Image 1: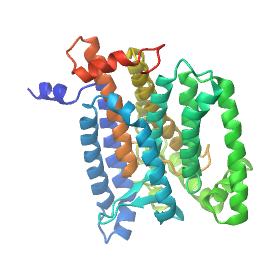
Image 2: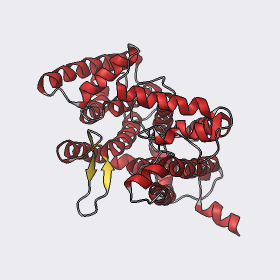
Image 3: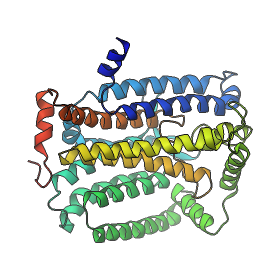
Length: 403
């Protein structure tokens, strides 16, 4: 009976459900262990502050996954343009009225509630969904440079430009993810090379203007970080963080120091978010920490590709592909930063790092992927689908233009 309830409640790709459970277990263990001392020091001796916060967010996230994966994915196509527009408005509001934390204004506080949202996380997901819709709609016209620029590239550039002043690393990551999605979606490589060139010129020009107007801007800080990284000389703060992360990884070895025995958690400023991967390796080692997590993200990627192959229509295929690429790319970026192969970016480890907006949006993305998987699996088993989901399966056929 219990097994029957599980199969009725959690539909879609079962492997993805299992991966989500693995991420959540790692998250609770690592967030609690990495933040005990910070919670004790900053929250009146309450050592479970971050654990409780993460547990509540993951519980809410699980509920979001369940609810979203029951929704017909067709609604995301209809709302994609509106979602990008709202995201742009939120980014503008954040720039002028946002909350500043660690010298960066990336959060917007909801009045009377006090809950803070990181608007770039919302914009990132909205943009990926919009690209899936646009690639499906114009799949027979992707050789038209003007059309591709107008309907695909301009929204990407607007969103990235709004993110860039306070979060250049996220802007670069979002731009790179969008370029990758468009390449997979069939946009000619010569177009993408031109867009990358224009983006580089724009960033340099923007940085020079801000250098003249406001020398302490975050963009200038990031330009200096990248120059320092490639020159082999990091800033003192970045050098400290990366060195502590390397110490955590090297002392963790194959089997780790055991849960709760991390030393570097007391040194790393962002031990429960940006550098949580290093703490996981320190406590669980390569065999029980790093390798299982890397494998989980790789399995998530391959399961996403498997769902895409089963799709007979364009929009759900691009939707799953875009969201999977976004999640895995961010995970890989977080990991390479932790081992010192990339400049410090401030990107969280999806579904593992402590967070609020990031947890909600990643869970929403997983829910959307499972929504497509649910419909695809039902079609393959020849199960009866609701009328609106039957229409989904016949509306965006490969090689046609959406009407």
